Amino acid sequence: MYVCNCNGLNERMVDQAIADGARSAAEVFREHECRPLCGRCVGEVRTRINACRHRDACGSQPACGKKPAVSTPVHEHFLMAAE
Ligand code: FES
Image (cartoon, rainbow, N blue to C red; front, side, top):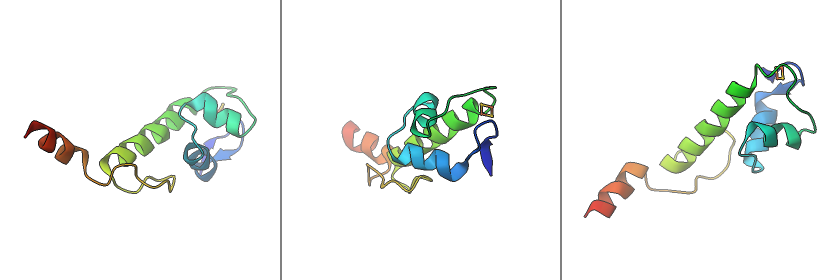
């Protein structure tokens, strides 16, 4: 499914840019050598970046395929820190 119709970026392309290190919508566009035109997709791109960060932090597999940085769920880290 296309995320950005103006530039022909689909979900896989956006997720690949995130997996390659893009941490903002601008970096996703830069990775694909394009730029936002109408801007309607920027919210969706940011949502995908944030979803990747959340999944990364809680230890589940991010949609982008990147290995989770933390293997213990975040709430358990808070419990351990409180002890
Ligand atoms: S849909 Fe992405 S810039 Fe228009």
